[in-house]
Image (cartoon, chains in turn yellow, green):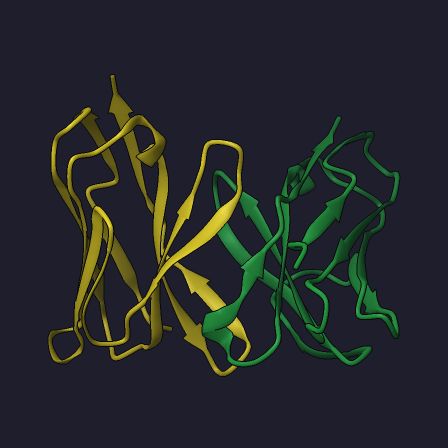
Length: 108
Length: 112
């Protein structure tokens, strides 16, 4: 199956700092997305980004499908950004496959 | 619209017991998927139901089963619980393509 590598595995930030999370794939993937799981377990879809760049407030994402990677940028981080960030792709038209995640801790 | 709801939110069971978890999808969504999240294995797909039929199943033993009712509510059942079944169980509903899945808050199951 397709291997997904997320880096870094853990990230500690001071409030207000910027950061970049990366996701590498061993092969082409479908329907690439980024999810955030808050400390209470709730998963929220951040971006559907099979290619190109999207921005939503302080978050933005870029996927370069031809080079099999995606980046998630967090700017001016806040404590509410803490949690685990997953890059996710679909297998077929029904199943989501999750990377191992990057655990982000933002300190006040 | 109300989001995806899951009950109960927390559950403690002992080995050998069985458990039933419930998921109510967003109104109008006919597809419900279940995922298991553990520290060791991460998030893994369990199965998906659409219009009361199981369409797809992940690599889990037969102790894990589910069903979907005519109102699209879904239940999953785990029989003969093992310690390794301790996990966060998440369900997700969608109306269309896979990128529009919405997750519930999850049920935390602890098996003692």
